[in-house]
Image (tube, each protein chain N blue to C red):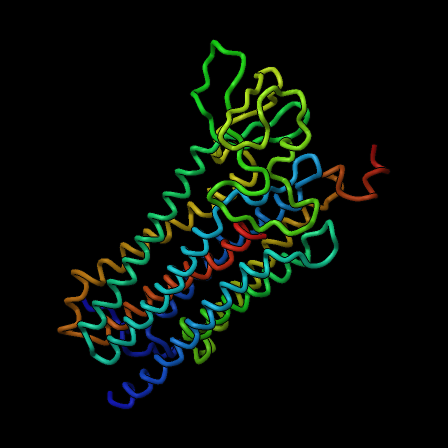
Length: 281
Length: 114
């Protein structure tokens, strides 16, 4: 049975059906990400002096690179659609292939970022200061201390910060200025600091459970990454087995690519908002 | 089909221009985030500026890449509905946040309810 109105307009809507369908789906996606953005807003409003919203914990150059990659992939997917409309099949394959490659690069960079976070350790001391860094040795149940190599004070090594001159933007590790009870060198990012377990209120790797900031970061970027993977699956089908439709009904294929492209642009849109909210502001 | 091809060719030039604009705006987003605006202990100005730039970028993607500039009314209606529902979702959450009955710290009124 033929799917109706894949190319010709439906009389009541005036559009081919998949276009209405994808916009309805994107409307539901607006609800989904809108709810998470709302959660971000309320979590951030709830930050206090004692538990400030952190800054400078994410790698801005990597985030910027990913943003550029995703925007470029949006351009290439619309070029792929334009090539199909102009019946240039080989161009279509090339542009869609580049789109898929950009998506893969995005995911690979994201996986490096996640792994970097999972290896990062943070300690909340009982006097409400926080020290972040890397463990120089695994935590041992027999010892009453942990050895932490602290991050450099103003900037994490390898990460650019968005710090302005405002005094409240130092949510990362004010501990490095105020701590005087520790024998180890403070601020030297090669020497491990010895932190007594008795002084530690809470500590952990930068997992979603570490702080509200990381909870919302991993949730939103994780859901976004799932959408990237889903978009990749659809585009891979249209690049591979689905491209056979070009022989019998090229306009139908063009419409399919347009619909997939609309989803892909939405994924890019979400990232355009995620990048400044999580990495920069 | 041929006048379709000419139309598409004009569009391609537009796509490239918009791509350039998006790249510039992306670099601008990062640059602007490093300068502190507004009151000394408040992030509000920086966040507002950042969100305005992000909205401009999102509008460029929506209007040109997603072809919304010349779309039909039916699609606009769907998006309007989505926008209204998103605002409703947010307002409902905010109402709970400031509701003094469920949230004792929510407003001055709550000091009367011991």
